[in-house]
Amino acid sequence: MVVGWIRLERLIMQSLAFDSEDLGATEEFLNDAYTHMQISNDSPQGVRTRIRRDVFGPVSLDRLYLGFDMAYDADP
Image (cartoon, rainbow, N blue to C red):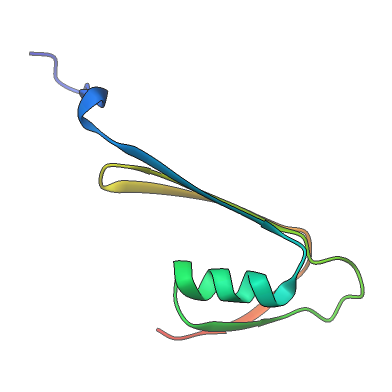
């Protein structure tokens, strides 16, 4: 028995990716993935969003890239 090692063959890895330049699509994705929220962007620049979620058993890792400043209001 080795303490500190996880038998990876028992874990099922799941991945989810999102990539968009549409603020409405980004808001819809964030609502589905996290909680109900409204987002806005006052900048005339693009609104590129990339999100990747990797799930390893009970642990999930989210990586977000927001190519703009975002304001949000979310439910608790």
